Figure 1 (spheres, protein in one colour):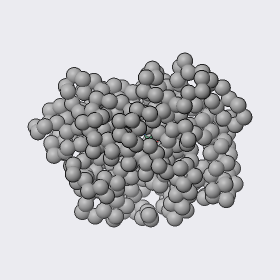
Figure 2 (spheres, rainbow, N blue to C red; figure 1 turned 180 degrees about the horizontal axis):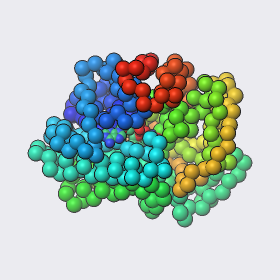
Figure 3 (tube, rainbow, N blue to C red; figure 1 turned 90 degrees about the vertical axis):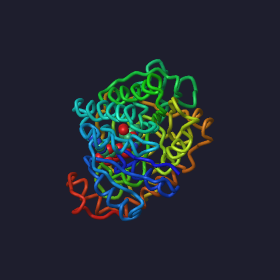
Figure 4 (cartoon, helix red, strand yellow; figure 1 turned 135 degrees about the horizontal axis):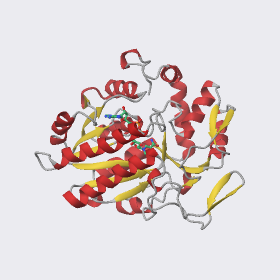
Length: 358
Ligand SMILES: NC(=O)c1ccc[n+]([C@@H]2O[C@H](COP(=O)([O-])OP(=O)(O)OC[C@H]3O[C@@H](n4cnc5c(N)ncnc54)[C@H](O)[C@@H]3O)[C@@H](O)[C@H]2O)c1
């Protein structure tokens, strides 16, 4: 069993991954600065479920160099999930730069200078590094968007094209991680994720489209539909994401130096309009839509080609979108009160938060 440090472990993905790693028997520590709304509540939830099986360290990857270095020294594999992209602030490029680029650089430097044998790092990046998919033809038909050439999805040979502060800062971090593997011979793996959804999302503007729709279905408020609704993406359940990251953690010698695209894949492709229909059907509620401008620099179709990670690790998504959304509806219904508290008072401290239920 490995000693695993989950940086950003109180976030949405970190919560799922931490629970899964502990279940597999790994000695798991969580480090987070609890800056994102919901992270304090997630941490409380993890601590109430896992007790002394997790150790928590409140650190900021931008500034807490010596504490980070000490943690790195007692770790076999570090999973880097700290990121600014899901927090408000696309209009604030400096925040993205400092968290995503400086934060990742600090982590890499701590590993390079580690007093023991350097731990491996599994860095979670984003499909945003491919930007608007320049050169990939697409067209719309009915309620959704399709690739012109009929390809199943986007693979790792797609040219990088950083096209907004979030994609640019995450792309820079992604490339630093790869470079540290080449220049300093560190064991690094980069995972470029598309859309992940599931429990521990709260329906905030930065959460996944299924989560925002489910929150709207439960609370009765409107959901903001970006663009004309035909933007098409793939969706991976958070439980599947936890499984694939754990698989990487356990197989670093197979994956070292590699980049993998990871997502729900073609079977999980839905346009935004089609997702509305699915959530309405599964929740039995009608959702009010408010049409708003689409954000800049995002592609109108992105579907992951999981072939490479599937081949290297024998992994494929197990949870269907219908099952995953049903789980999300159940979880959000049970936690409606906590969600309301979080959305109305995003900086709510852990002690005051309404505890989350399983
Ligand atoms: N969730 C998705 O669908 C998705 C898709 C693509 C990429 N990603 C990337 O995966 C990573 C994790 O995503 P998530 O959805 O769990 O995000 P999240 O915002 O829920 O979690 C990030 C965590 O990092 C912590 N954090 C932020 N700044 C920090 C700092 N300076 N020091 C220490 N901790 C800090 C936050 O408190 C939070 O708990 C991010 O980099 C995100 O961009 C996520």
